[in-house]
Length: 299
Ligand SMILES: Nc1nc2c(ncn2[C@@H]2O[C@H](COP(=O)(O)OP(=O)(O)OP(=O)(O)O)[C@@H](O)[C@H]2O)c(=O)[nH]1
Ligand SMILES: [Mg+2]
Image 1 (tube, rainbow, N blue to C red):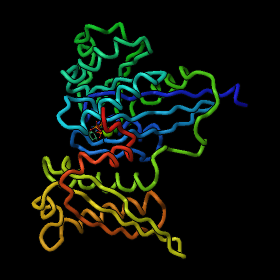
Image 2 (cartoon, rainbow, N blue to C red; image 1 turned 30 degrees about the vertical axis):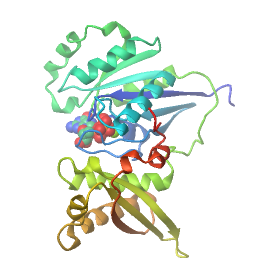
Image 3 (cartoon, helix red, strand yellow; image 1 turned 60 degrees about the vertical axis):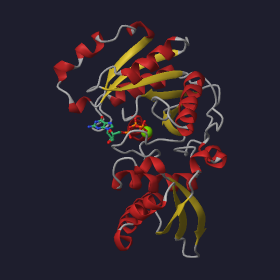
Image 4 (cartoon, protein in one colour; image 1 turned 90 degrees about the vertical axis):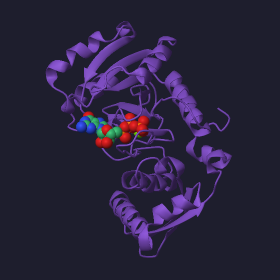
């Protein structure tokens, strides 16, 4: 059996907000990576697993690459390049409305250094007039480093089947590395924390989401198969804690309800979610957090 199967890695690279996580979720056919309108949503490395006939494609959703300011940024960028160098195909995803911006140019510079196959995918074509697509290619001086170019929408699914067929055709022979039923490699407790973090990104304004992190501290199943999840939201300052809790707890209640609904839906069980907010000034410099996300603290 294993000599007939194919299996390989595709690293999805791109500037923050290009739609990398949205594309991974669409190809996997389930939510495995959180998505938000804000940049720098993805922190840990998430692998989405796609089965296409006798082929297993392991999509690596890497955090958007950007200019590093903090230790966490550096660790995320280092992880992105490691994934990129290890993958069979590097897929550079670009927001078609933005074209080749400075973040994307930097990624292209790096892709040139490594001989592995790279493909270029313009995303969000549902948001741009068709005649504006071709001029995008002319912007690219380094077009020769890409073996293929696709124009897709991860929202409507347009042309995504062609992309999937291509990726599938390029995977090397080899045994499956994950169970065929797996959709992702993210531990369930971490995934549940990510779902809550997504709601925090959606409900909180501006910079606050970048100053917080979520940890699942307890996970118990009742005799009736209901799931009780406790999570702590760590923030850096007292003032941030007050904003998250909101007037008479209204904000935390909204966020909790939204996360609980989604977790119940995704886990197909009744979920009881308990959220706590704590100040931990230095969580950004806590090596344990990095280990949990699969990031290198000393990057
Ligand atoms: N209209 C439209 N919106 C899209 C498309 N793909 C993604 N989006 C939206 O773009 C925003 C960013 O999507 P993400 O998938 O979180 O982007 P990302 O590249 O993973 O971002 P980071 O994790 O921050 O690097 C979200 O609001 C998505 O709903 C698309 O094809 N069309
Ligand atoms: Mg993402």
